[in-house]
Image 1: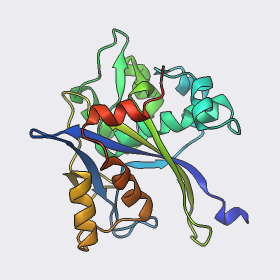
Image 2: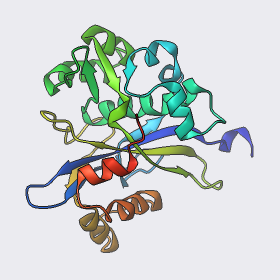
Image 3: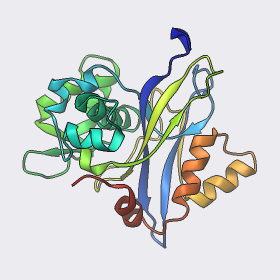
Image 4: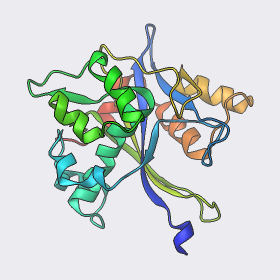
Length: 234
């Protein structure tokens, strides 16, 4: 494998919410047509793991899962900081694309939408880094809010490749995702069954890992049952 096709480490988050009747829905976003990777496809929020995601400064702003515990879940071929970086990247990417912030104050209370709106704009225009945002608001990424679901890698023949860890997370109370953002032209909440049916009918284009994740989640009855199955944090 040459350097051009070596996959980049990445994280993806499947956001879940309870429905008023029974069951739950997942949050799907459609990427702009012109994007070089998955342009026009429906997928889950996510992106590449950066060096900052694995840095001591970032991991100091994380709680709920230690780097050593993350390594036991991801695999011993990663250092503890590299392993924890997948979780940190998941929190950061979810906030960048949807405005949902899986974070807590020092008191243990969840971050609210009001904490993130102005910071979200500053983050996207690069006038504020994610680490600085957390420091300024005295927040810690709540890594225990993410459950580890699966691991997928882009096929070798693709010019742009990612080695991606999929996570699940419950939508925090008092937060609502943005309908659109710089990397999202459209978003929708659907049950796993509805999403698979729309895909089969040609109305919801997606790649196989997205469909496979929906198929796995379709076997569960609630957000609670999903998180109980896939949450490995102590």
